[in-house]
Length: 462
Image (cartoon, rainbow, N blue to C red; front, top):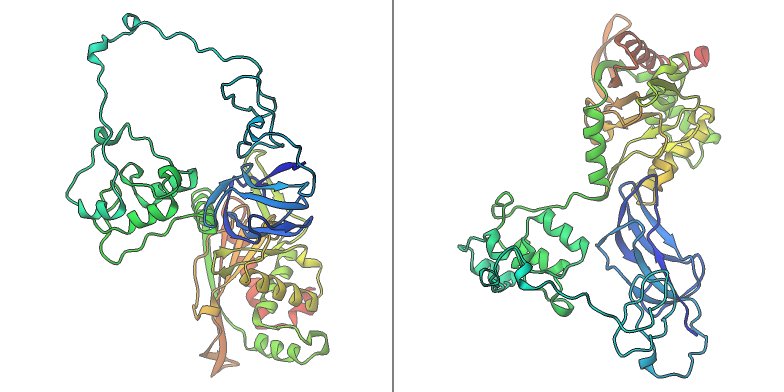
């Protein structure tokens, strides 16, 4: 007989509480195999495909694309025995299965009254009784003083616009019960839409995501939020953008930031990059100035390991990390993410080049996993690819330093006592002043500049 099993949204990272359904890769009625990709979900850290834990037939998709789902909530129901025989019985002898309850339909109790099936137990046999109501005289207020307030009419999105001059008061709408899923309610809060004034177009008058968005787009909607002028766009803060905002605020107001700057003649580094591109070891691999900057940073960390550390507030300790998990800030359509190369200090230069290329390619395709963004120890942000000279980067939470690499430009420079056109760039280093003082930060940045100005130091210091 059919056997129903729910699959709940798992925790796709460390401590994540929700995820947004991006795309369903299956539909109701589809037969799926074990480990077949089911759905693409965006969390605060990455967009990931979730494989099927069952083989069977998809019976119910509990959430539509675009909805935000709490971790642990059912997202899909399977029939794991679709070819089993269904017992010959009358339909009235079965209690319809409630969504979100694991297991097959339970037999109806031997009573004419409908009894709800509870999770973890069967239906209770016997007739249900209701506790007697208290007499009216026992109430604090006399019965004649209790009046029923008529439910105000709900408005469609168009009606909201047409009644722009009507001011909604809390007393008008306090008792309206609105049918809407939690993600829709959250969207309404984000967009400043009062659900009580919307006529739902879904089943049984349920307010849908489209109803909320339609009401939000009405220029004359009444709301307590900031009034939007014509042409304004409201973007819900969620996913990577929400996580980035929270992390940056926490970092900026937790770690005391110090930023230092240096301008460097990197003509020898650019010549080194050109020579590396011609070597067989780098065939088929992208060799860029970022590769040499990354190698210089790794060597500077070896000379100044405190830059590769973090502050443990609970233990009141500084943790100096043995491995360098080198983060590279990557701009993606989903927002800024910082995947990292684990154990970058142990990689040969060609292997480091391949790791950086794979990291950036994966990030741009939106396939970076949460594991790739965890446990970073130090970061490089390359603003030079946007033609920007410099910046004051905010620390990636949990790290002691972040290096900003600016654009390489042809500029006049005094070289060997004469004015010449040289390849020049700017570096800036932000660091946590609880861990790194000004002297240590300056020495680290000076070493970086020296390595890029004279790559022969790689051999001397390596």
